Image (cartoon, rainbow, N blue to C red; front, side):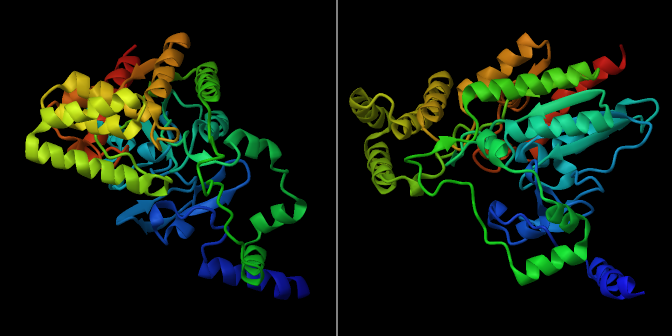
Length: 400
C-alpha cells in the first residue's frame, strides 16, 4: 500500500497530466518554443521526435505515431517503404500531407489494385546527419524489415561544431541505472526536471574559427555506404536522393561571420552598379574582384545570380555551386557531397535520384521560391515532384 501511495499515485497523476518530459533543450529548432514539446532526448541519436504527439510547429501541425514517425504507424501485413533523412524528409514548413513520404503513400494506394498493401514510414528528423541516419537505419531496418529504403541526407553535415557527431557519440557514456529508471518513470523524470532543470548545452560552435563539420566528406561516404549495405543485406531495394539545395538563396549565416557586414556592403555596391549600369557592368566588376580572390564564395554567388538574370543558366549554376563548395560552412549540402551520393549509389548498385535535376526536368518554369521554402527545404510542389520520382521506381519493383 505504501508503495502505491508514494509511487503509484504520483506516477498515475503525472501520466494523466502528461507534461512534455525529457525535452531536448540544446537546440531550439526553428526558433519555435514548441521545439521543447516536439523533440525529446535520445541517448544514441541525441534527439528524436516525441511519440504520439500532436503539436503545432512553425505554423504546421505535426502529428506523430507511437514510434515517433511523422506518418501513420505501418500496417502489420503491409510492405514497408522506410524514408530516412533530415528535415527535407520530415517536411520542414509544409503540411504533413504534403511531405514526399505522404505523397508516395497516396500514389501507391492509387496505383494498386488492392490499396493498403504498402505503408510508407516518414522517419525523417530535423537536424539529423548521415551519422544519426546510419544509427537509426540499424534500429528501424531490423524492426520493420522494409521492402524499400529511401535515404535523403546531407544538408546538416557542414554545421560548425566543436566536436564531430562521431566524436560525440564515441565519448558519450552508456546511460546509468538512474537514467534508465528516469526514462521509464514519468513521475521521477518530472521530479528531476522540476528540482534541477537541465541547462541547455548546444553542440553548435559559438564561432566558426576553430570549428569542424559535424560530418566530414569521407565519413559521409562511409555512413551512406553502411546504410545502403545494411538495407540491401536485409533484402530491401534502396533509393538514394541527393540533398535538395536552393542554389539561388542568399548564403545563410552572413550575420555570424566576422566580415559579415563587409560582405553585405560589397553586395550592395555591386547591386547598385547593376541597377545603374546594367548586369554586364556589374559582372565585369565581379570578375575583376575575383581575379584577386578567385574563391570568394559571396562574389561567386552574386555572379551566379546576375548570370541567371542574363539567361545564362549553365554558367549561373556553375558559379552558384562553386559558391557553396568554397564556403567553409555552407549550411547546405556541398556539390562534392552530392557527388558522393551518386558514387555510393553506383558502387553499391542502388537507385539514385538527383533531386535538383528532377525539379528542373519536371517543373522547368517554376522559380526557386516555388520549389523551396528557404535555402534547402522543398516546398509542397518540390515534395510532390520527389514523390512522383519515387513512385516510378517502387512500382517497377512491385511488378517484378
